Length: 443
Image 1 (cartoon, rainbow, N blue to C red):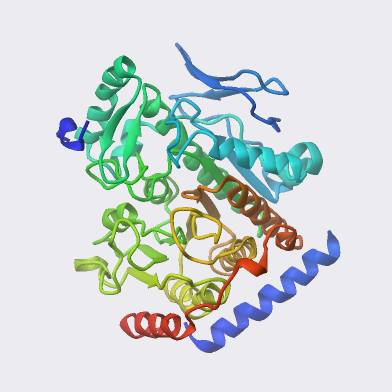
Image 2: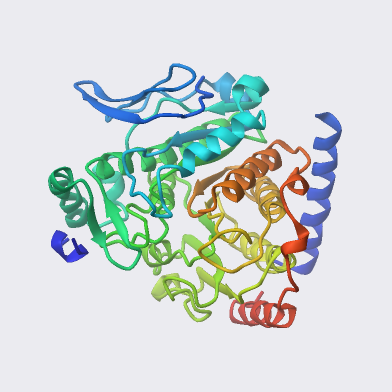
C-alpha cells in the first residue's frame, strides 16, 4: 500500500575541549530490573488503565507498563543520581518482516550483547539503569512533528495490516507495517520522551547526569512530517526535540545524526526553526539522495542545518576530523540546552547497506566525545536514539562500546575490529568536503 492511501567556536575553544576530554577520560580510567535476554516474542495487551508489555519465553520474568496517562513512572531522584547510564528498550517484536534488514532481531541482539558483556544492572548495580516503565507517546506528541492526517491514517491502516499480515506503507525503503506497528511506534517514541524526562530531572540535581540511550525501533530519522519513509515510521528524535522545548523549556536543541544515510525527515521537520540545529554526516550519494552541502535551512532557520556528505570509504580518521573541526565549533557557537543524537551504526565497515569504513572504535570515540561535549555545553543533558545498523554483530558490539564510553571505561573495540579489512581512506576528498562545509557555515 502506498503512502497516498493515507491522504494524510574557535580553534582555541576546540583545543580546550580536547584537553578537558582527555583529562576526564584519564580520571574515569583511574577510578573505575529487566536485564533480560530475549529469546521469544513480546506481545502487547491493552488494559483499561493503560497498556502492558508482557515478555514471554524470557530467561527472567519482566513486566513493562506503558500508560497513556500522566507519567509518574520515572526513576527516583536517588536512582537517577546514582546512574551513569540510563536506557530503555522498545524492541517492537511484532513489527517484523522476514529477510528485511530492519527486522525484529536488531534490538534483542543489542540486549543480548549488553548482557554478555556485563553492561546491565545485574552486573553494574546502580551505575546502569534500565527504564522499564514509561508512557506511550500521545497523538499530540507525534503531531508536534507529523501531520495528524498521517497519524490517524496509519492507525486506521492497522485493520488492513491485521487482515493481510503485512502491508507496504512507503515504497522507497521499502517501509512495511504489521498490525502492531502503530502501537509499537508509539512505544518507541514514548521511550525517547521518558529518557529526555529522566535526563532533565537528573540534571537539576547533579552536574554530571547519566547519558541516555533509547534502544528502540522502528527507527525515525527518515520519517517526513507527512508520512513514513526509509524503514522509519515516526521521527523519534524530532518528537523528542519538540518535547524538550515544550515540556522542559529547553529552547535550543542540538541534533547530531551520524547514521550513514541522511536524516531527511529530521532535516525537513526543522528547516525554518532557528532554535533546533540539525547536523548530519552521511555517505555522499546514499539513500535517500538528500543532504547536500547547500541544504542549510530556510527563512529564520537558515544556517541552523548543516549537511556534510562524506565520500565512500571515509572512516575513523575522517570522522575524528569532522568531530573536532565541524561538530565541536558548531555546538560551541550554537550553545545548546540539550544534545540529541540519531545514532545510526550502519556506517560500520561490516554493514551491508553502505560503504563507509567506521569501526567499533569510531563509535566509541563519538559516544565519548559527544558525552563530554554535552557536559561542557549543556549540563550533560544528552540522549542517544538508535537509528540504523543492520549487521547484528557490528551493531551490538558498537552499541556496547558506546555504553563503555558513557561509563568512562576503555574501549574493547580491538577485540572485535579487524584492521586487515580496512583500506586507505579518500583523505583528499574528505578534506575538501570538510573545508567546503566550514566555508559555507563560517567555521
